[in-house]
Length: 128
Image: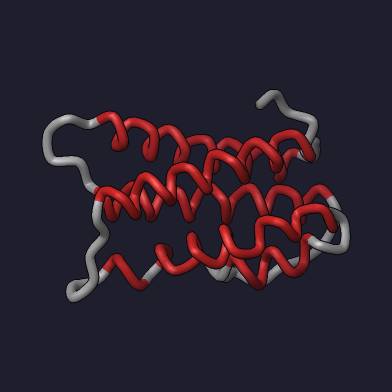
């Protein structure tokens, strides 16, 4: 893998680890944090795949826009369109007052992130 892709993967794995730890928290779990880190993990895996394919991308957090760019090299990922659209909202919308996330949504985000992470890692030649 290219060095920049390795960096994106390392950062994605950091977000994945935070998401997983927060999901195991028994006292005061941060459901918004779980969703945010699920989104961040998916975003960074999309960017890692784009880097591997030498596809330039903007500094955005919109998973759907990034996803659309990856379809050129990963057409089978089209099955993740709905999952990535769901996760994309957690980049900004739920980080401000007035919006909140419940346990069910957090566990859903975790599940969607895990599935996409496994596919992305496989595409990058990494263990799942």
